[in-house]
Length: 119
Image (cartoon, rainbow, N blue to C red; front, side, top):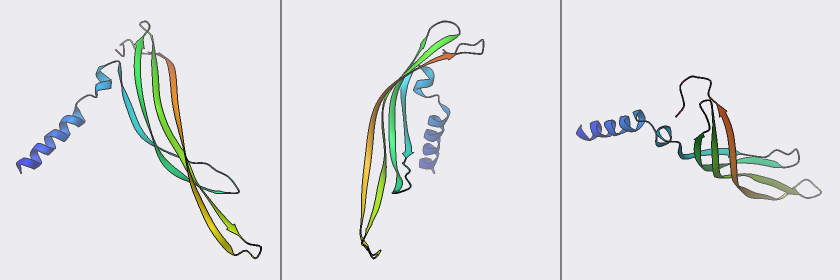
């Protein structure tokens, strides 16, 4: 019983406490994503990828601030092709998985519509 109560308290602490990025002007964003491709001739399916970004919010004045993101993203797809002979008999099926990696830098200019500063 004590173990369950302690586990519940730990979960409540992490759920109810603000994240590091909410208290500071910088932080890390991590997430999963599903990417794919489409073609009429080939059979493509989705591959699960991920992204990890570092971000910083910089206050310019009372209304404007900028958000800078620098990160790595991995996406991809699986391509399946079936080879047949002249009679329509299946000879073989070939599958290839392609993974694409991106490094990106993004800048956003934000305007605060409220009187309270986001910082």
